[in-house]
Amino acid sequence: MASGLASVAGYTLFNMTDKNRLDSAALQTDRYAVLDKALSQPVLRRELFPDPVIIDSLELLLDRKNCIYRVRSKDGAEGISVGHPFIATSSYPMVPGSLQRHFVGGDARDLDQMIFDATELNVKRQGIPLCVHVAAIEFAILDMLGTIADKPAGQLLGEVINPQVSIYLGHLLSEFRRLEPEESLELMQEDVRRTEARAVKLRAGRGDNLATNIDNAPGRTEKLIRLAREKFGDDFTLMIDGNGSYDVKEAIRIGKLLEEYNYTFYEEPIPWDWYEEQKQVEQALDIPMAGGEEEFGIHAFRYLIGNEVFQIVQPDLFYFGGMVRSMRVARMAQAVGLEITPHISEGGLGFLYMLHMVAVCPAAYKFHEFKLFEAKDANGTEIPIESKAGPFESHDGYITAPEGSGLGITIDPDYIKTHKLFTG
Image 1 (cartoon, rainbow, N blue to C red):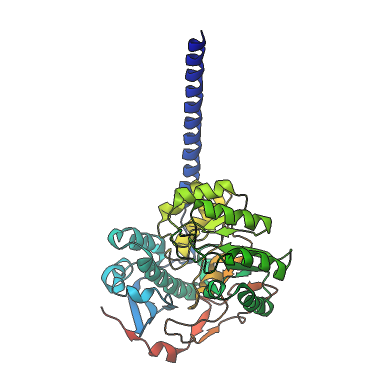
Image 2 (spheres, rainbow, N blue to C red):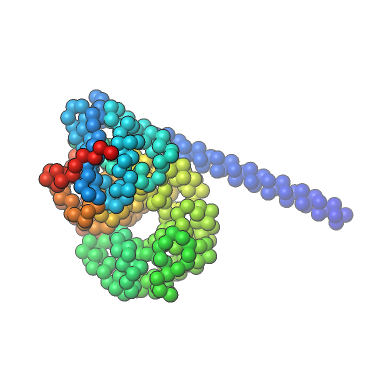
């Protein structure tokens, strides 16, 4: 009798478990269907351009390590962008060799398809070195189209949602790991006073993206977490980035400490492509998890959002290939109740591209990464820009989104002339 009951109980349990699995699979299928619907919507507001805008030329201009992209239409319209401040130099030949064909001769109103082709049809070259060029080409095209439509580049992708962008300071990366916590926090506090920012992101561990659990000094991260809360006060917003420093166990231990000190989000404690391990950390903690800056595939974000590996997704506007693709991530996040804050690199014109994106971004997080207005190019030279509208300033931790046409700036022509045409 006991054996029979055990058999029946075992059979019932098995079937209940099997049903739960089926229900879970159905829910996941439904969730992906929602994401796919969001992905299917066009991004560029084509209705702003009644006539074709045929791209006549796409030029890559170089000065030592730095690059500029210039695009011109057959009707003489022009757009210019400055490339990534340190990654683009490793992959210049991709532009004439693999990317020009996706843009030159085409109608810029088909930008969505151009970006798709440039990233997805270059399957053997996919990755961040390719995407930083795609992004910069896109920025130049948006600059040109914005000039034609007399609208800021961001508004070519959506209506303004966030005219004032609230910032968090995310710079001083090396200082937070190299200097004593007291010294690095003092430097950050000076910039908080200067920008009136109401949020700061710190750096945990060694940041090696190898899950080594190594700190630059024993107990350094724990001390940083505690001292930052004491220095900035209970009402100040603090977050921290692990840059892949930890394995699951150590990431959870540090995460519990962050919860104790009321940190707002915990960014990539696990190496960026350890999806299963990152999900384990997310399930073990209450603090919101953030990540995605190294991702370069739209399907990867579909998985991360579909499985809520992060509550806050962070596509990098360069590493991920531009604003059009990032807007698709934002729409997916919005569709399932998650949030987005774009990642930006230090230097270049990252702050400018971020402002355009966030101004029209659905599901935007309450703070966005800012690494000051120091627009230095890959050679360390300050990029001479002038805003077409009001000056770029931070007041009470907010920056007004660009209001001038295109990218909203003019670049000194003499600076551009220092760059020579790259032909491969």
